[in-house]
Amino acid sequence: MLPRPGTLPMRLVYMLIGAIAGLSVWALGDVLPDVMPNARMMLLISAAGFGFFGILAALLGPVSAVRAAVAALAMALPAALLLLWASFRYNTAAAFMDRGYGSGAFLYLLAIGAPFVIAALHRRGGWRHYGALFDAAWNLVVRVAAGWLFAGVVWLVLLLSDQLLGLVNIGIIKDLIALAPVPYLVTGIALGLGLSIVHELRDYVSPFLAIQLLRALLPALLLVLAVFIAALPLRGLANLFGQFSAAATLIAVTLAGVTLITTAIHRDDGMSVQGRGMLLATRVLSGLLPVPAALALWAVWLRVDQHGLTPNRIAAGIAAGVALAYALAYAAALVTQGNWRRHQRGVNKWMALATLAISVLWLTPLLNPERLSTASQISRAQAGAAHEDLPLWEMAHEWGIAGQRGLNRLKAAAKAAGDEDMLAQISHARLAPSRWDYSERHASDDTTSLDGVVPLRPEGSTLPPGALEGLDPEERRRIREACSRRLTGGRPGCVIVIAPFEPTETADRAIGFYATAEDAARLVAYRLHEGRLIVQGSPRDIRAGNYPYASSTVIREILAGEFRLVPAPRTVLEVGGMQLFPEN
Image (tube, rainbow, N blue to C red; front, side, top):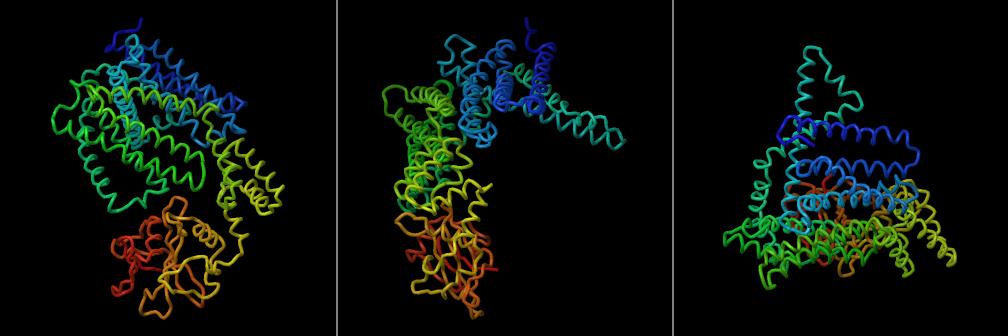
């Protein structure tokens, strides 16, 4: 029988559990790799151990220590087995963990599954009760955050104490901390004590304050989203198409909206927002959320349509799909019969279960991103995609066994077709130790001229023959790669603007704009000297006083003639709200 909460023995029990957890984490991280020759077995034991103690820390307080330990083991071991299963997609466990997708799915399973376990242990069938799930999830966030905050304060006090004793040449604290297991032991004890105290004061330390603060942000997000949607017809969608950065922003905005709506509707109508204005704001935000979610999915799809699947794009597509499902379900709740807030609470529960299922699938052969990506890229190659637009290095080094088998298929097809260039590129991809080395090898192999490849503006501008051939091989490769990209409307992803930017000079200067893999634009300043372009750094935005970030939209605007050369008193290139000058 455990002592009653709030008593000194209870704190000692939690501190002891924390000490055991800290020492175990130290052993798993620092000792096990030296004594366990089998890397996959080490992965299984480490994942199960880290998962067990992580869930144990999360459950301590609301759940008794014994039941928390049983539940933590029941969660951590199956999740670790799934992680081990997924690791066989790669030749080594280390290569699999380096990618990060598997560990992300593993951690998500444990983090989102914990509230369901807490609710289930509180009452029979509690995992189906939204109020119990809501309380478990938010209390878990506050409790764990407070526990780690307390552990951080303990370390701050220890370090300050060490500094103070150091003034009188006493280094006992520093000597103790230098012992390998001590930092883990101290952290575990501090975390256990913190969790115990937070649980004792659960009537005073509640998520209510955090929820109220988040609710206050709902009208602000609504205003920003409304302005964004209103500006779409005026500004257009050019900045969204195919851009991962834009897609990530839109997904984040949608999920932020979901979180704020969740705080507004709370666990039941009695705890939700009551004011007419906040209720209206919550309804309007629910109705607007499908717009950024749909745009995010569209942006990812356009990227996939242009360049095929990769594990990154699959993950982004799933995230965008989940965000859109949330948003559409929230909006549908507004028009269904009955209480719309109750319907939205049901959406939260079922979407959480759906994302847990996706995480499980990600760790099984049913959702193997490396295999799906490899199949997509092979289809692109068979359809005639340019060799340089295929992620050959990634297939060789980052996509595990599926990617390597895909390269073998491409190699066999290239041999049958007598495609020596593809065979050479596959060989380079396999031998290159890094993506940079692979790109550098291509740069040194590419001796073809860039004359006529890069569009020049203003219309009628010319460069001397071979003006770009003086650039280093890597820069020429990057220019050729940018020009091979096709922006919305089929325009090339590069342009050079030539003008007498400095009236006191006899030679022209130039600014190059080159689309990158992220659909931003890389800006380069040039000076024309003896018939060759010489790189002189980056152009400066005179208006903003900085070296600007630019999207590939700027390239489309320049190619469409939507720019001006303005004397001010130097000539500046005015485009996309910037005034660019090619400074040294």
